[in-house]
Length: 70
Figure 1 (cartoon, one colour):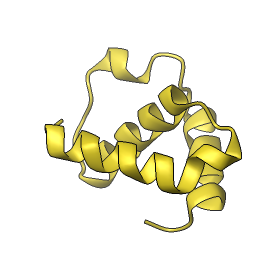
Figure 2 (cartoon, helix red, strand yellow):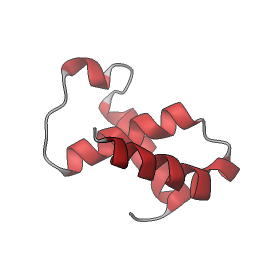
Figure 3 (cartoon, rainbow, N blue to C red):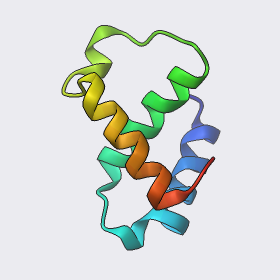
Figure 4 (cartoon, rainbow, N blue to C red):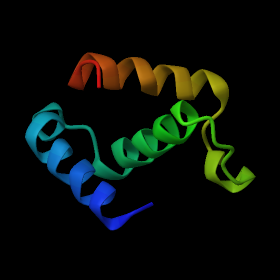
């Protein structure tokens, strides 16, 4: 991921998610997975470790509620 993209995500987290109490590492990982999925790219199998399909769906819904549509 490009450094500029990481910087944008950090600023978005600080601006919109910090007050919700969601830990940054979970939020960042979810954003990365969602961005790759939206781009139609396949991530290495280890990237989804700990995120079964149901959890990915739940994270996407939580993010939508916390941040709103991208």
